[in-house]
Structures are given as structure tokens and as C-alpha cells.
Image 1 (tube, helix red, strand yellow):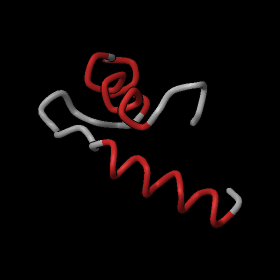
Image 2 (spheres, one colour):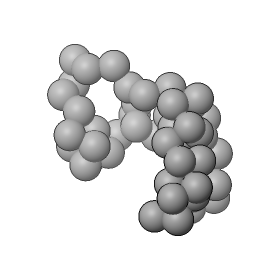
Image 3 (cartoon, rainbow, N blue to C red):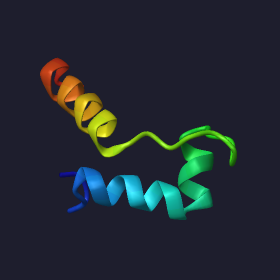
Image 4 (cartoon, rainbow, N blue to C red):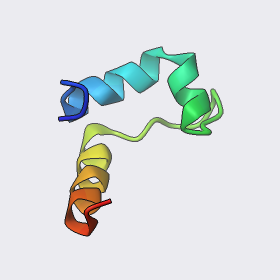
Length: 50
């Protein structure tokens, strides 16, 4: 978990936060990555030690 947020909590945060969408370069009409996408991305970062 990053910042004590689970992948599901991260998904909910991005859904509810305009600033998070801006940070992620997502338009308001674009779909939000779901928790499984966030989990796969985080796992890949850990694998690459990024």
C-alpha cells in the first residue's frame, strides 16, 4: 500500500479528486483505472524497483 491506501482506496480517491485526475493527466470524461490495474502497475514498479 502507498500512503496507507489500498488499491481500492486509490481507485476511489482518483474518482473523487480532481487534483488526482490532473496529476494523472486524466480528462474528466476519461475512465478511471480500476483497482486491479493499479495493483498490476504497482507490482510492476516493485518488480523493476522503480
